[in-house]
Length: 410
Figure 1 (cartoon, rainbow, N blue to C red):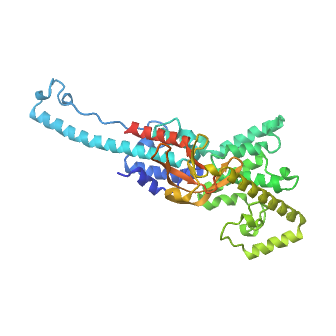
Figure 2: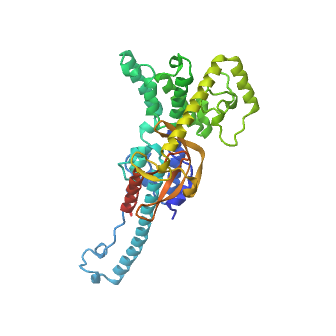
Figure 3: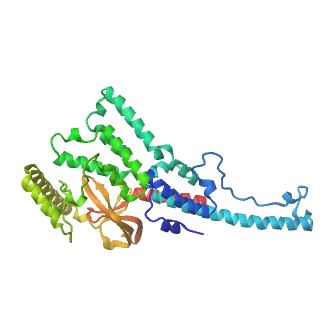
């Protein structure tokens, strides 16, 4: 029988981060469930009348002869029939046990691969009901939800409500869709921050309002759903009738731009001479761009000084593990501590206070206990610049809940 490890190995990298991931994610669930004759019990497309997995009932001599008061009352022929039923029962019972174990593997796989949707199924322990919740209308019918948002926002604006003025609706919308499409929210939040720091005085009037940002999101969702590929998302940000520019040819006025801020360049990074020349021409001919660059350089300098100062202050705890109830992820800042390690194809963003760090990969770490001995942490995030090491109590509780669910089913 396939195990949870086999299931995870066949679906490496497939995480349900948003509605566009549903088709591929559920297809993996379906293949595994079908191979264990479980799909009919789990299919989320079937709303009513789904069969329920039940333990087979052991046959008794009364099924053969309802007038018999004991086993010895059966004739030879009746006894052979009872033996045959028992043989069938043992076979069905083994099949049932295999299916229960497969369900436990599915349960574990679902918890590991549902990204930000864990809260959706936190109170539900039945796999079939979990899949039904994850395919609920508010997760799949995005266009209808966006239309309702636009309708409510328009009515609120007509009433002159203070909560829908300026860019507050934009911020609310981005927060609302962050669990559905985190890259979309990250992109526009970062863009808003860049405009606030480096943009022109009237940047707020040009930035997408609540209606416009919802239209952009809907278009991005539609394109991503149609293409169902990693590279399709960026197409949603191309302007109407605008000339497309290659990413490397378009300088970004940011404190993290490697061309503008030499101190931000990672080891081994080499600038493109053509891009560098083009940026120099822009700076020489555009006083505003030059001024923004100087601001970015000054901002980065202060940021690095602050980081250095903070790093010195917390150094005593840099190599220690602390138990944290505010984090939902185990974190380690030392690569050499990992017993095994899997690097991410692309770093993930991690926000700690007012700092933005990067998760470079995940693995297994052992930490020393004060009373002696070692304790193993699984699925630990590697964050090189984090100020200490975190053992997440939330992750512990989540694991305990998962294990208790598995044992209950076994």
